[in-house]
Length: 374
Image (cartoon, rainbow, N blue to C red; front, side):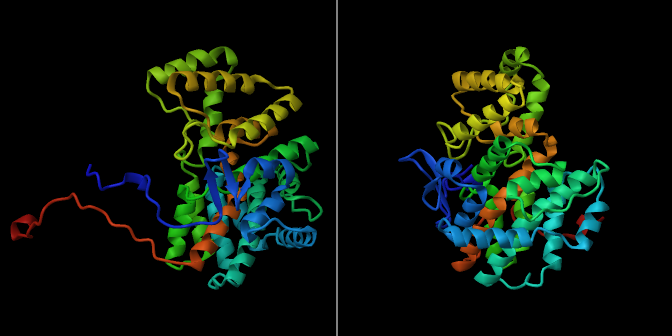
């Protein structure tokens, strides 16, 4: 491969952003300048969602208005509920999320309006409705009745309620809230870049988020948290972990939940998420996955010098909360809609069509001869 080809755009700076940055000087992912772990400590997810979309943390009045708008927009149309009811029960929930957002675009009166004001309104509607659509499918595929959203519950509480019919103890809700904060945004990752690329053609926000969801589904991106759980289920119990990981490394298998394009000495989100994973495991009185986690992590660091990323603790934590494995990445979606929307609006504000070049390596010039058709 030629030295001037940067496969995967590795190391290429393609634009500027104010939304987020991994700051090496404090070894932390930051949103609008605030360290993500500090936001987890002091803020609810709604406050962080406001920050990402509006550039500053909200005051009391701004937060109250933001929450009111989000809660008032949670309900779906009868049409979308019917579409979800008729989706194949074996559909992957990521495909359901993608289709639901696409239908929202068909139903939204402002779909073709991409002014900053319209995009902010549409972003909030997508943000509010997507959890409702996903939880409706979560219920339907199990033969259960859809549970409509409640306006008196927080974003995290409402998602639990719509999926399970009840809100768990506050410590579980806090751990879930923290995961939403840590998943909300991460600069020019592949799904965000997909959203910005779609936006660069002046397509609409529903289309850009639909494309981003398709990108996030892949196991090399958001789907990694699902793959972590599949791995842990294959290991089954802590007694098997050491042998399993050694065999995986010997056979040069990919160990999901480790490594990151940006972080080389550890994902700054992991300590916070690992802490809350431990709290959930303690509340659920189930330390099995924690023990597997520690054994695999130790071997990966010792033998490969590769550290876990945020998907590694998040997968088993969601499992302990009761979510089906194929719903882990959709939870990522309901959080990352905030980051995608901020980048989409940022792209619109200073747009340039994203249109890279490719180096041709196919056949040289060939002439079409009559003989070719005999």
